[in-house]
Image (tube, rainbow, N blue to C red; front, top):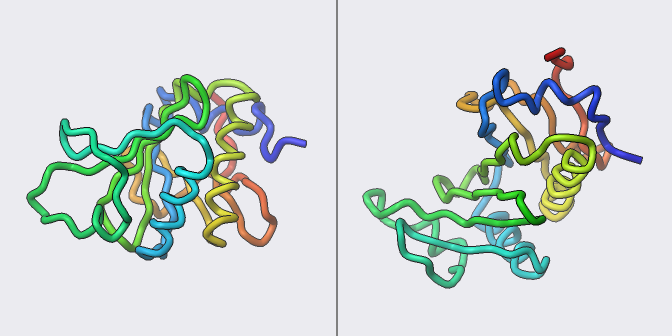
Length: 162
């Protein structure tokens, strides 16, 4: 059974209402949590690419990616958990894992199930919530996320009717 039903969640996947690139984040993270995510990506078989600015490089240890100088080029890890679904992790802070998804790639029940599966794998690995906020949101009003206690992705806000 699906964690979420498309009819209940579809408003949160409308780029006109939510913005195209909502933030997804794991609050209260650590360098060890970042490393666990990097290890998961590596072990998963998901296609991925690490880069710093325009330079594509081998994936470093989390502590290396997170300890780069403030004026260094942006470090990011692009992960494709499925064909045509891109997740971009950005190494801004050791205490929050954050990444973007593109709502235009996540339309319909099958793609929602894929996202829920991705959030669940990360949440289970870390034992922490994985939350999705609106594009440019401040992170204080997540709309859905992996809930550790229920071990599934749940709605965290009233559904939006598009």
